[in-house]
Length: 159
Image (cartoon, rainbow, N blue to C red; front, side):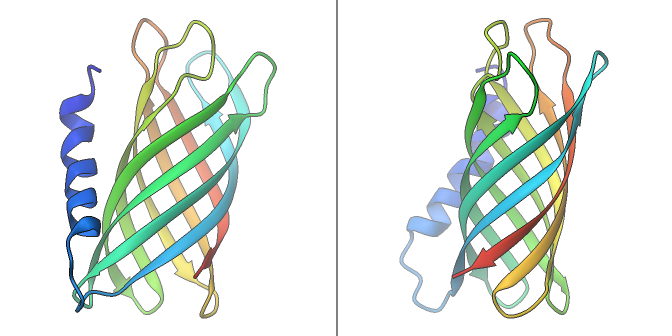
């Protein structure tokens, strides 16, 4: 795991905050679907994903969270990618969240290795339970395979 120094602090911090008893902190669980485009120096393809996660509020403005996802490049000879990670962010406008995230993900092809994704995004509430999302993710693959970039939009539901 050559990306462990990048990923480990985010995942450990997120897990520690979620596991710690903190009755004064509120949070929300969410599920979302996204679709977009993934590209590298060799090709461009559509991609779709579903994510389940939970955010914990750190006061009125900041939050951290953990999430798991399944992602599929919609092209022949690709596998479903499974991943876990953490994120941290802030509420910067009414109903809006800006965040940065890091995740580990399984490989999407037989020749690929597992990867680490680094992303940033914006979520905007459409009503009390539904939000829209825009996210950019850079996927660090290694093993001679080209890194990839993803831009995705989606809708989510908060519990």
